[in-house]
Amino acid sequence: MKFIDNLLNRITMYRLMLYYLIGLVLVSVILALFGAISYNPLAIIFSASYITFVTYLSNKIFSRIFSAPTNVESVYITALILTMIVSPELTATNLLFMGGAGILSTASKYILAIGKKHIFNPAAISVVLTGIFFRQYASWWLGSLALLPYVVIGGLLIARKIKRGKMVLYFILSTVLTVIIFTLFNGGNATTLLKSVFLHSAFFFFAFVMFTEPFTTPVTSGYQILYGILVGYLYAPVLHFGNLYFAAETALCFGNIFSYLVSPKEKLILRLTQKIKLSLDVWEFIFPLKKKLAFVPGQYMEWTLPHGHSDNRGNRRYFTLASSPTEKDLRIAVKFNNPSSSFKKAMLKNDQIAAGNRAGNFTLPNDKNENLVFMAGGIGITPFRSMIKYLLDKGEARDIILMYSNKFAGDVVFKDLFDQATTIGLRTIYTITDTEKVPATWKGKVGRVDANMLINEIPDYKERKFYISGPHAMVEAFKATLKNIGIAKSKIKEDFFPGYV
Image (cartoon, rainbow, N blue to C red; front, top):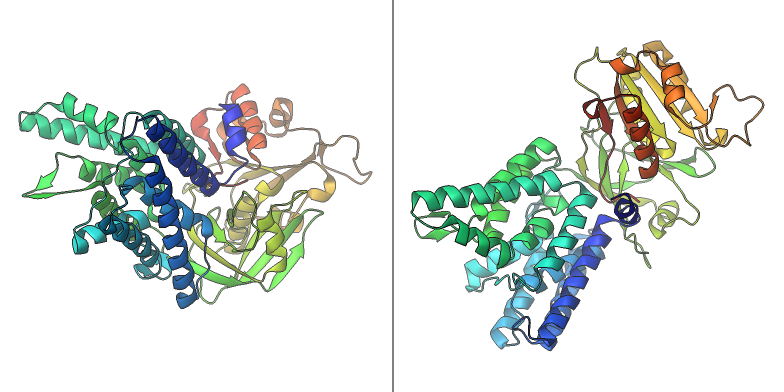
């Protein structure tokens, strides 16, 4: 699993989804060539090309009309999802259906939106609308046994990448229990029906691809569980109200309404006023806010920056908010690798960026008497900067030890703030890992954070809760060290935001 995680950590979730869908189209064409799928392989290719062209063109038009930033990856993903759920039949009626679904999916992002945040999964709402107004329905044709292994394997990678496994599990359990209960009450055969759902429908494609779409799902774990239960219940093929049966896309749209009601709704168009070089490779970006943004210290947002010739990491990123809710500006700190992605290079050149989809449970515990250890590696310091600045501004004392690890002494950022926070009980332990380049004036620790350092510096470590943030490899190393000294999993909280590379 470590090998898989390392691969997944090198690609954004959007690019992973895009490659997955392209792969499904190609596999479908190959299977069709050998007769394993009852569609013409050329029709599948034409369908994918046609829907993608219509969706891309309509997105260009709507984005210009609404003066909104575009995301080409999102366009391609929606188009390929429609390719897999609308029958690839080259009749005049079906071509109108394909084109209409592509246009409606794009329109939904701009028109069926409140505060620039769209409400519905674009592919789902488009086929719901074509069904209502034109009596044209999605066939979900990819629900075949021949495609199932590819759907499931790729889907599991997506769920692991975006940490939505629990949400998907509750969706599956809800569907299964609904089927069992309804068939038992009606004298049906639950086993036969579940076999049909699992093996001969698009159930897993729906679960891993459409159900997990990040913009239209809840951002907190509790609501994600409720969302999974609700959509699973509505998805079950036995559920109906009189003669009204829920299609998969209808179930998802009802779930999207629930998600919108319980999720943050802001989408901001921000203009950069200042960028500060904090260290050799870390820059701080500062954006003024027209009105106060309600968030919890430690949360992150998704940032969209359209730019030409984007690399395989795309034009969207997740960055933790380094600012505190007590500050008037919004701040993020970004590490620039060598070479940096096209997105980060564009950040240094552009002064406007979009931010939304605020989320994250990596926040301070409600119990103010709980003793904490913050373990930060490199740019993983940003959520702790937000938390500590908040506590300092509020004058709220807490027993917190910050262990801040960097390769070089010059990599340390926000030191003035942490030194100031001693007044509210913060103790900071700085350590650098490059033992060959230790400045003569260095007063912190030298070497990697290991069991001996933890035990020596934090004698009451067994009584504390640990928060870990940093690069994936460093987080895993910190977790292994804590496990070795007997820290229970329940006392370790790690930072996560999907798609970070």
